[in-house]
Image (cartoon, rainbow, N blue to C red; front, side, top):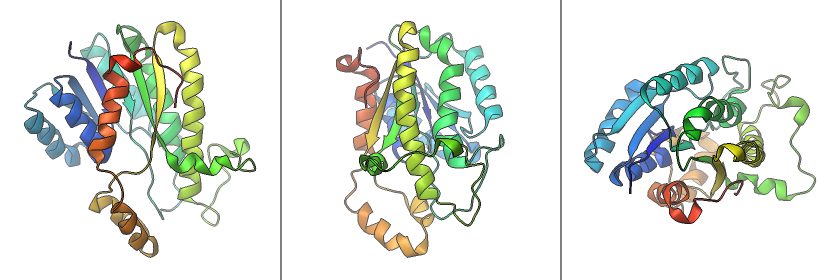
Length: 259
C-alpha cells in the first residue's frame, strides 16, 4: 500500500495513541496533533519505537482554540502538498469540572468536540482534496443513545453555552449534546464536501478502557462505577483498528455520510 499522510488529533493517549501506533505500524506517515507537547513527547517516541517507523511527527494543536487550529493548519500547508486522512479524535470530557469557555468564548466541550473539528477540517479542505482518496473520520460516542427518546432535543438557542452558569452546568449533558451535534455535522459536511471527493464519516465508540489519568478526572462519587465499567470496556487497540479500516480499507473507499 502506498503510504498515506494521516493527521490524528488527541494522539497522545487512549484511542488516539493506539491509532497513531496502528497507522505507523502499517507504514503510513503519521502526524500526532496534541495540545501539550511536553506531555506528548514520550508518547511520540513510543509510537516511533513500537512501529519502527521514523515518519511520525508531533505537532501542537489545541482543538478548542481557533488561533491554535489556524497556526497548525498553516504549518501543515507549508510542509505537505496533500493530506489523505484526518481523524478528529480529540474530545473534551472532564467529569465534574467547572464551567469553562474556550478562548473565543464558546463552552469548552462544544468548542473542542464540534466547532474545532469543523474549523480544522474546513481549513485543511484544500490539502484533503489533493489526495486521490481523502477521508475524514469523526469520533462519535454511544452517549447519543439519549436522543432515542423523541422528547430529547438539543437546545439550539444555547449551542455555545453562553447562558449557562455553574449552578446548572453539566459536563455530561454538554458532552452528550456535542456528540449529537458532531454526528449531525458529519452528515452535513459529507454532503458539502462530496464534490471535492472528500468522504466524511462518523464512528460510534461504545466505550474504551480508560487510563489511570482519565479515571482520576471522574468525580470520586462516580469513580468506583467508572472503574467497574472499565473492566468490561474493550482495549483501545480495538477501536484503533476500526479507525484504520474506515480510513484506509478499500471496502470503505466510497462510503460517506455514514455513522
